[in-house]
Length: 481
Image 1 (cartoon, rainbow, N blue to C red):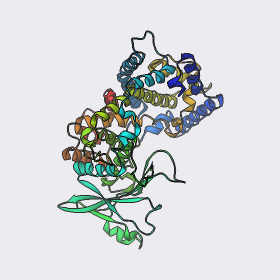
Image 2 (image 1 turned 90 degrees about the vertical axis):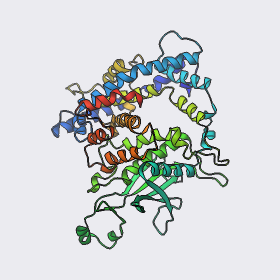
Image 3 (image 1 turned 90 degrees about the horizontal axis):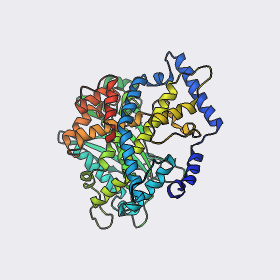
Image 4 (image 1 turned 30 degrees about the horizontal axis):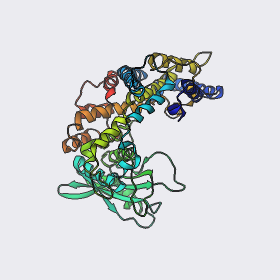
């Protein structure tokens, strides 16, 4: 809040620097983690931890990741500079000489948004058109259009669910004029005491995998024999079952749960994972649905974020919960314009974090050890929007360096691929059944049972996406993310 509202640049600088400094203990802990992982990788026969971690990923090699991130950075950096200059000039009301410092960005962005405030900024206004019920109906209508499947609520009984507010949806698909159940989704969508807070999640309870009848009759006990099955293409599969959890507000006595556009986007994202599980048809459980390469798994879910902001898709369902009035699309455009005011700056920030992740886990660690401060400084000097500051050593606050460990680029890669899929397959008509079948056939049905780049080549129709250059080619189009 200080960075957004303090008029004095020196105050902003002091607050920014205080948030970007790590203790020596934090820095040493990070450097020890990286050093131990480097030692582990060498024991396992790899040159460094990045090479070890990427061997079974879509990227395969650190060089491929470096090419992707470098290509994306070079495409994004000038766009981010132009974006920042536009916001700065507009917020100040006139051309402003000199370059901004990093601690000034939030202040001028807040000033810019203040000058362009619209009704879309009122959180409850857009939400009144996005009740949870109509959003779920909209998802069912969208999936019916593009995949030929729909949701049907089913009553639960006994010990089937873990909380009384959990709702069950059966996923039905047309099979030669007869609907059949192809999946089950348990929706645990409301906040409650004792529930894990934070982001939404998709959990696989039972995957879709092929059942060989002769083996099944010998191996299944009495309980296993009750597992719901699906006949498809002359083969038998387990019916996949998932739990989808969110933390939306509990509906009131007189009004339903109303979602913000961000929450609606979150629900669409998680339903992308759900469709990956529902529509997967693989022989083995360990490659079913979302059980695929970690730098490929977010593609179906990130693609759904493009659908949720498309006016043609919103027009399927967005209605005022009291009047039935359709959502005014000019307000959606205002909202998106405001959200995008520093979009390329955000992308560049993510690129820099992914580069930091790669550089730390490919660094040569000599007798003197690893100097992560120097790595972070040089990275910002080479690719940053602002002059780097020696006292800043924020790298030791980035917890993803532990959790991801040389794979933080994954979300950026999937964003870039999803942008290409949206542009080349769905943008002309997001309700196209042909486009949906193309994505289903080339991507969703395979789970982890097909080489990811083969899926990407198939859905995009691009044979040039091969070898190490494939990631760089995807990165070159990344400014459209």
